[in-house]
Image (cartoon, rainbow, N blue to C red):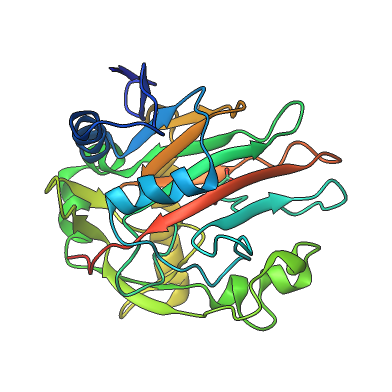
Amino acid sequence: MRIIPFTTNCGVVIDDVDLADLTDVDFQKIKQAFATHGLVFFRDQNFSPLQHIELANKFGKIVHNRIFKNLPDHPEITLVSKDKNQTTNIGGGWHTDHSYDKEPAMASILVARELPSSGGATKFANLSAAYNGLSEGLKTTLSSLVALHSNDHLYGEGGYFSGTDLADKLADDVEVNHAKHPIIITHPESQKKVLYVNKGHTIGIEGWKTEEAFALLNYLYEHGCKEEYICEFNWLPGSIAIWDNRMTWHYANNDYQGEKRTLHRITIAGQALT
Ligand code: SIN
């Protein structure tokens, strides 16, 4: 197995490994790479939905997603899909999955299933590197602040998705959640400091007026997606990405109008963040 940096700050590619037939030693190496980098990519995997579930179970408890529809035969797997006649996509803005939960998801495992002839890449950002790039003064200011997160504005009644042509992809029992988390968290495994706000789901800062909060948040969003912290992964048949939701943002490019794109996602449970 080889672990090769994808870009300087963003992700690693792991090759010479078959995820459908992993030894314990190989899995431990993948887990270690995941803990260190928060983002691991694989190519050329031949990976059934059952093998996807098996790999997810090795990482932890699967979160039963109640935002988008799951596969009828495998409710552990969420369908991240856009049909050729649809124009809106899932995840088409910088976000991290499930920050609106009190115990935000640890990881997501995304598997390519049906790809457009071009486009449809996913961008990622490393929020631990972005934290390190802040001044000591701003780090100190942020260290006492708590951010408010929600998914109501996106998936709730009258939320963004209900007014788009992707409304049919929403789960029938959509779950609306709200949570508060420190703006700077200590990563539960690596103990690294991480900037934990995201444009998709952060709706304010505790004790601050909305316009004050967004002046600061918008600065942090711009900072987090600076060139040096981000990378872009082009999906090919057999590609898989596993990311740590406590350490990364992602953004699904919506540049393949008129073509279908389907990926399968499993999300792994996390814990309260401090
Ligand atoms: C997501 O936001 O989980 C989907 C990412 C993608 O489709 O590339």
